[in-house]
Image 1 (cartoon, rainbow, N blue to C red):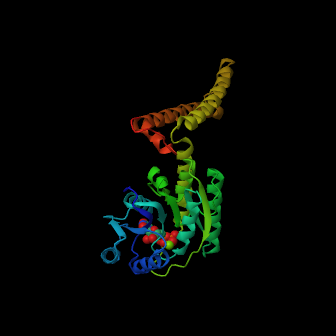
Image 2 (cartoon, rainbow, N blue to C red):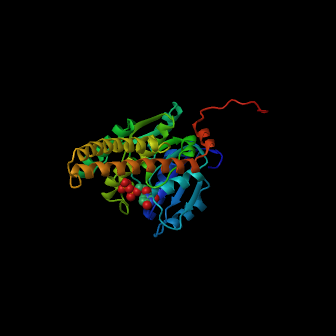
Image 3 (cartoon, rainbow, N blue to C red):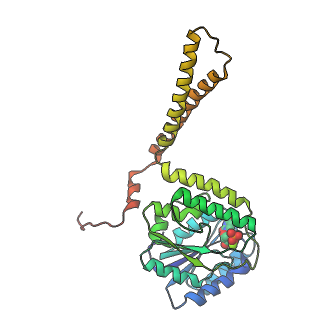
Length: 316
Ligand code: UDP
Ligand code: MG
């Protein structure tokens, strides 16, 4: 990330949104000009329409616009990550390009940051089919239940961060929806406010229903990464011991029967016992593998990410 020079950076990831971009820029100028020192950071995620041409024109017209483009489509998480690298604001906003968010909400969210919060998530009331609404509710409930982060809407694109937050968090895959979860886990203060949400005016949504169930996989990864990513043996070791112990007891019992003269070769219980021993050993070794991968890739300097404040004299 560039050193902070602006008050605020609005990071806009976009894929084939040429019709919306000028309007977006206008909306931001109307609501933010004169109120806060800001820049817009466009990240063109491999658009195949006219988007980059529109962005280039806007860039030549205004001096508070920055833009990068990807050679091919990489997804919203990588686009946001690139935007965060290029952004120079002390406060970072993420916003969609499709005019579904209300630029005026940004200032209300910035007020919350100035109250002392590190992350402010938007909470939108989306108009969608009943089926989709129910799935979304289940998704949000599951995220709350498994992560303990009490937000109503994890999918809202409009979010505001103090720049330290996005600087400290690795973003890849499809994990952008969980930025507030990762932030909260790192000790940042997270809150939410209700925001407006409009219908899409131009183009169409880049995601289908598939995103919702993929969201559950992402949730499983994030919960695992957050809780056990750095100590995989605590999960796999436990599972391994459990399976091994049950298998061992079962087979011990079988062995006793064998010594009493019974035939055990065709007993399903014997198979089960053996299977559990093998699985147990495999779980355990999987955990050990995970630990050694961690060891090779980890860097104790990472703990600097956890600092809140440092007091040091010049000569220290
Ligand atoms: N987007 C992107 N890369 C992608 C898919 C989407 O940068 O691979 C952008 C898209 O242009 C928009 C934002 O991410 O600015 C949200 O996408 P969309 O509006 O399609 O999602 P929805 O609002 O339907 O959830
Ligand atoms: Mg949208």
